[in-house]
Image (cartoon, rainbow, N blue to C red; front, side, top):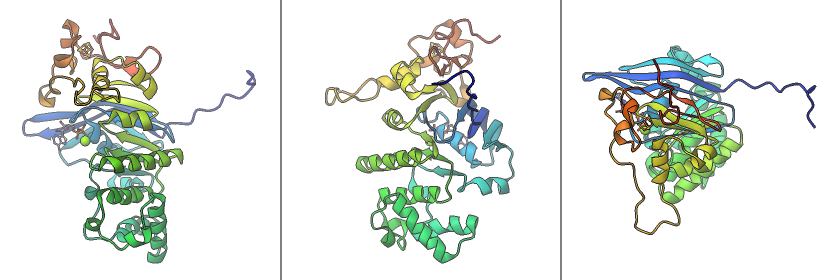
Length: 336
Ligand SMILES: Nc1ncnc2c1ncn2[C@@H]1O[C@H](COP(=O)(O)OP(=O)(O)O)[C@@H](O)[C@H]1O
Ligand code: SF4
Ligand SMILES: [Mg+2]
């Protein structure tokens, strides 16, 4: 039994702590606020799902963490990883982290694979570059990495080129490449979208295994079923802003934001009539170059009223944990 004399366990600092991240793109038509003041934190071994419609800033959030943005991007705010500030970090310093402590899996495995290199070369380049292993040692580690991702006939695949592999096998190679440096944080951008449904389940099992082995994962997906299965916490983005976040079970069981409610209502269920699609949220997300002055969701929200059209709702704690940015949830919290 615990007594008041027991030492209070020290809370370990978050592995990743993002504060007021803003990623804007300068374009000939104006500045696009792709990520607009996002804050989040993730502890070692935790899994966070990021959901939202296409164009809501999910990928640019991950690319900002990885420092993989084009030259027309401007990043503001703070991204601390293992206590180190990544915003403004010299490219050489970021390179030391990427692929070692921090890794990214893209939606399309071909983006990450070099079509002219065998599987062995793709995998061993990371090892030779970061750990100075010999070619022979690297081959052994590459084989072990393929085994870890349950690649069928792993030794045979080492000498093959990406075009000789199926989509699922390619994504296994990409995950093996991401994991070979032993990252503590894996960022996955819709890692199963480009795959057949049967392979999707395998890849998700693999991510669950990595998570159980202690790797923290940020998983971007438009599939709320995947979030329910894999993620401890969920963050809902709309037009580059966080509209709701919290423990997955709380948000799914009791969504407070009308947008989250709409996303959840659109999930097909087993007891649905076959052929009867569920109700999707009507309308389109706003043009980021012409955002309305108030809540970005107002034009589609069945509950919108006057204040929604004039003041941006702040993200404030939800009753029972998490946070929500909606005037109806936080009446009176209009910024001055
Ligand atoms: N290089 C760029 N220049 C201008 N706008 C961009 C650029 N890259 C992305 N965007 C815009 O940023 C917004 C967020 O994109 P993204 O994060 O890729 O969305 P998603 O949630 O679908 O992953 C989109 O409106 C997109 O058009
Ligand atoms: S702030 Fe208003 S418009 Fe926005 S989600 Fe809440 S009720 Fe709807
Ligand atoms: Mg994307």
